[in-house]
Image 1: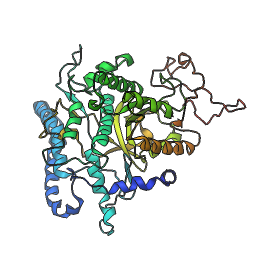
Image 2: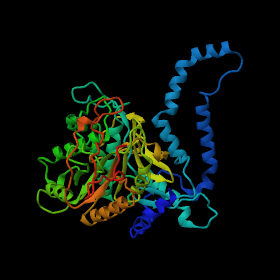
Image 3: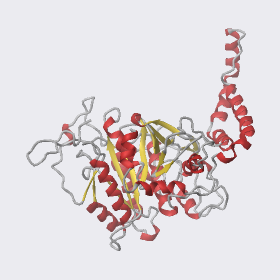
Image 4: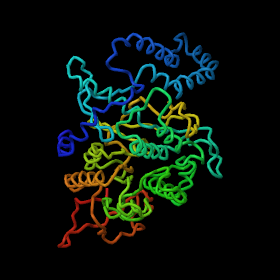
Length: 487
């Protein structure tokens, strides 16, 4: 893996991403590595407090089994109540704010790539390399500045349903919200923006959060996403796959665009869903068609300009039950793209938002925490935004993520898009016949394969998250088995 990654990024453009790692913004809620010694005693004291709080669930009398049962029966309700308080979202966030970020499993020897930015990290403060020693702190500031979307409870009922919470079913919707929110952050505030600790807050930042409130009045709420995704079987209470999620965003953005001036669009960029064909069912490596991207930009601007900012969403299925190992190096390398918006997917059956990689680990934001519904007003520059950020750096092995996923990219202008295409083409050329996606100037698709002829493991027709693979032949008619395989 390390050898591949070094080759993948050792090109003319690697230095561009690396230099961004020195960007600094306002301090985040992460602990300051430069003052760790002075805070050590305080952190230890609070650590002991939290350890004691959690230990009440592990402490039992050793007198007798009968006595244990009596105590358990008598105090069961009280114990469960305290457990909810101590392990709940609010207490957890207090723990994070007091003790700083949690980064168990983060290596002190390997670089981290976070949405196109490279961080040289080291916990060896005796090395004398200030840039290296500050790398971890800079990474923590960047990580905690990414917008977190989680399960919410207590919002108005979704449509005609009785659902006032998305707990246990809305993780893919929340993951997609996070990805789009990062695109808006990059567009309005830049990649080097960091979350401020002091108020008043930035107007653009507050407006972004306003769009993701939990009501029909917020442009990109789950209420509106579900309404837009009805044609793709989105419904309250049901889990949804990445492909349907991408198409639902396309529909929602198109609906919001109608009747609204170009300069007032809630998502001020074109949206391009990159797939094998219009229905995403033809199979093969999805194709980024430059001609199509240009058309999307022209339509978004209503014919005013040839190119606009553009959000690319690439839904993929890279295996049956797990990701085919052939695609892991390419997945890893996409995080080195300055246009990277990460991956919505993650754990099988439990979507997360993957935003970085280190060695074989995927670093992610987790939407599965339950918080109360919130709707931030557009003009509320004193709003409490703590619930939209996280200091806990979670990770899973990259090769254990769900093979059904979607990758996002944001290109600010035509030059940025051209740079993306150059990187993507180079990545595809070095993929040993297993590209995630390819780049072409114009369409040149073979005849689609009938989806109804392809069955899943249970004998049924595959859902819309699956890709059917037609043979890809060369001039003499022989098929290239390694170009793209049915996984």
